[in-house]
Amino acid sequence: MAWAKFFRKPGGNLGRVYQPGSMLSLAPTKGLLNEPGQNSCFLNSAVQVLWQLDIFRRSLRQLPNHYCLGEACIFCALKGIFSQFQDSRERALPSDNLRIALAETFKDEQRFQLGFMDDAAECFENILERIHLHIAPDVDTDACTSKVCITHQKFAMTLYEQAVCRSCGASSDPLPFTQLVNYVSTTALCQQFFERKDEKPRSDMFGELLQAAGTIGDLRDCPVGDLVCGSCFT
Ligand SMILES: [Zn+2]
Ligand SMILES: [Zn+2]
Ligand SMILES: [Zn+2]
Image (cartoon, rainbow, N blue to C red; front, side, top):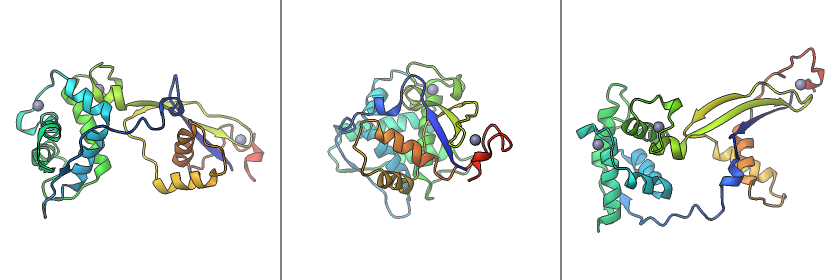
């Protein structure tokens, strides 16, 4: 059986959006402190990624209002770190306020608790989800069209998953869904690049590599069924 799964973004594709060289950030770089026992590296790396994304940093700065949760406000704590990144003369800054706000927010789920290690990618995604709640708390996360919600305006992708049989060409009904982060294994991405290293580089190639790497090992039955598509069995 030979299978391909396609991710499609309506009205465009990654290749057209991605411009080589445009990812260079002009933000000043500072470190974040991680004292022994704090285990804040997962949070610090998520904060560094958000800070280095120009579109996120600028959008956060321009937001006038949010639904504030006081001591446990992830939004305020993140804004606080960002203004210190901008103005402080220190080379390394504490991320304690955000660490405390994160622990308080997720205490019922026992996630991101003080002193405990956690997952950086999940932390990144959860911070984005919390920012949506601080900006548009009454709107369901899958239906958010708020113009000021950085999370959904800048990160949410509406994708279509569709299986296409490489033997008979039959395709399944497209399954639309929304996601903030698309997880792709670096090893799979490198492997795809290596297999196509002799091809002439094109601007949309990175999107194709992401798509191919994201569907490696995804084996499914032909959508028209085994009886119709005998050629699937090779
Ligand atoms: Zn707040
Ligand atoms: Zn939103
Ligand atoms: Zn088939």
